[in-house]
Length: 335
Image (tube, rainbow, N blue to C red):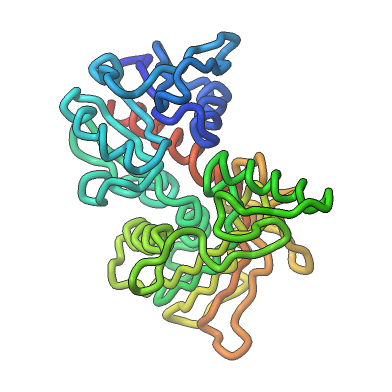
């Protein structure tokens, strides 16, 4: 087994890419050689890693035979454009964009369905949407204690779900309004500052956005249950980082609330906030590796219903950390 690995990060200058770089350093990932790749516009920049400044190069024309593992953290179109070249190079990939179908790159959260990674190298694995990562981590910890029949997710997503541009746009709009200047929306189709938008991307003919479709598919894949009824509604909130999720579970049997609370309290990677209080992205989740849970309660009218409030850092835990944990799983058991 190789002790160190040559790695590439595609989309290294984006918010997820830079966080990936940070976490790889924090967790002392065994890297022999690191290649930072991005678009032509970002090529030439430098990023700090282990006391060195590494230059970012363009992904176009990169020889993937020079690495053993590549992270895709740019636009889904970039993943689609280069995935075949990665496969032909014999290189494994971890995709954060959700561009590849489940049969090509299975959706995996290590704590939930790590056994879904099987076979021989090269591997292709998808890190699910940040919403699916947080929800599956919490519900996966409950195991057979709560047998899922139906799941309703109402997701308030930070503007960082739109990348670095989303963060910049909210900051610009906020400054314009606080200084009494007129505002002209750019990235978003209307005012984002001090507002809530009912959708986060363009809806399809049935009214569902790409991220809602993706999260629905991710959840079903993570729990290996294509018959599970999953409803996802995503809306954009004027917060820079962190997902805020209201989740309602319809279970097959009455919920034993005391056991649910005790199980969540003991679960790794989860911080349970005591009854009477609740977590928020600001002050709790942002910058943390844990998923925070509060307001755990049974339904008012239905004892088989369980409601939870979940907050998580969408860029760190929901994307970059899960991707690095997948890489750690690969090198421990498969590469």
